[in-house]
Amino acid sequence: MVNFNGKILEANTDFLNEENRGLRYGDALFETIRVVNNKIYFWESHYLRLMASMRILRMEIPMNFTMEFLQDEIKNSIAENNQQDKAVRVRITVFRNNGGLYTPLDNNVSYIIETKVLDNPFYILEDAPYEVELFKDHYVNAGLLSTLKSNNKALHVLAGIYAKENDYNNCLLVNEKKNVIEATNGNIFLVKGNVVKTPPITEGCLNGVLRKQLIEIISKTDDLELNEAEISPFEIQKADELFITNVISGIISVTKYRKKTFTNSTAKQLVGKLNARARLQG
Image 1 (tube, one colour):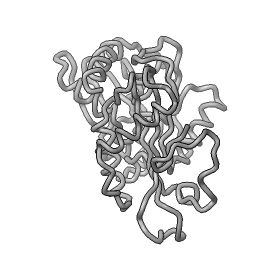
Image 2: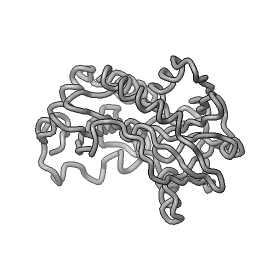
Image 3: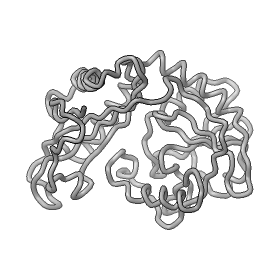
Image 4: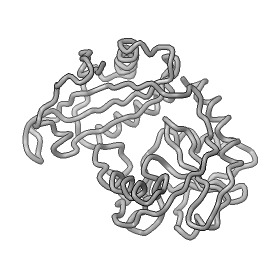
């Protein structure tokens, strides 16, 4: 079942056409949300990011788009799919309505809510090998639009294809200054000693919800020091740990980058704190 503007539709129902602006121009935003036993993790952060992103893209925010309304729509979608007692991946897509060419006829929007069952209700740190490489064919521009979770993800798609074709688990993306800013599917954190480093939003990385949560957790952990600063490719080869974060997987420890291998002791420490925080905020 899919929720389209509040109407529950059977899976595979045709309800969009060739004029859809998300398809034509990538004129759309999305939020990927983790829900466990009908508790929406970090919902306030997701909601505020969505509203801020809609304003940046000059979309008209409907009067009924309150936190409570969208929360109810998410839970209704989960209920229609009989997933209330499961861990669920929810995607909300908001797109400008049909009409116009590059310039829209108006800024009104529609939304879609999809749900998919996840394997585990907890954030689990996998011990499997996880190798990454730099993707240097194209650069992410260090600007405000790059920080949005928009449908303009051609660069990330190409990086994912590059990783698959070369037997890597993921790729690290760089900006026009050739600094490393994120992975194809999440933010990055680098650990050297007791310092945990992550690129600032001004570098062009995604303004990630889990990034925000981990920054707050690390800042309150006595034996760790947070540093938001540029990361060069050279620094990665000198790091003790490197991990990727997103709200669905939690923390993904990188085990290898070129000839460098990494440990994961800090990631292990943080994943427990992250699970505790998620349960409290859910």
